[in-house]
Image 1 (cartoon, rainbow, N blue to C red):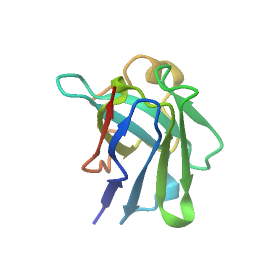
Image 2: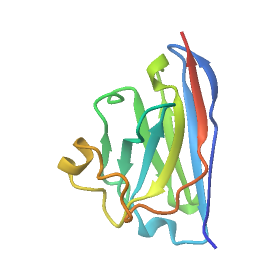
Image 3: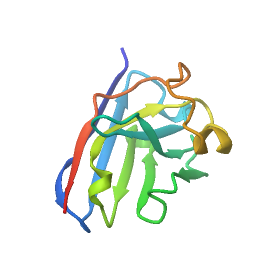
Image 4: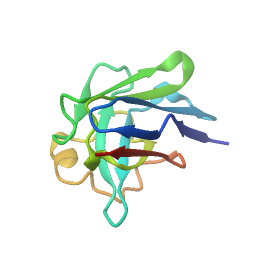
Length: 133
């Protein structure tokens, strides 16, 4: 049985930092590339970042580039998202999901990630990040 649990969200002031984590069990974590998504109230879910199965490559949405860093510890079956210089517009529920052996094509990630996409699986329940101004 696959279980994916995100944690680490919270309330932070603008300019602050947070680390959110995603721990998976019941599947071979390092078989997959993993991505972070977020969804704000009234908005569509959007892709934030992707990290390849080997951690050899990463991708970031323009809105977070230079502020967010994704990493993974395959020995701990855990994915991380370090968020610095947070802005109120980063307020959202953050989710992780497995996205296949490799991250989606750049064009796909730049144009909405093809959501909803049945290839993305093992979603967690999300962790709320709230940034106050």
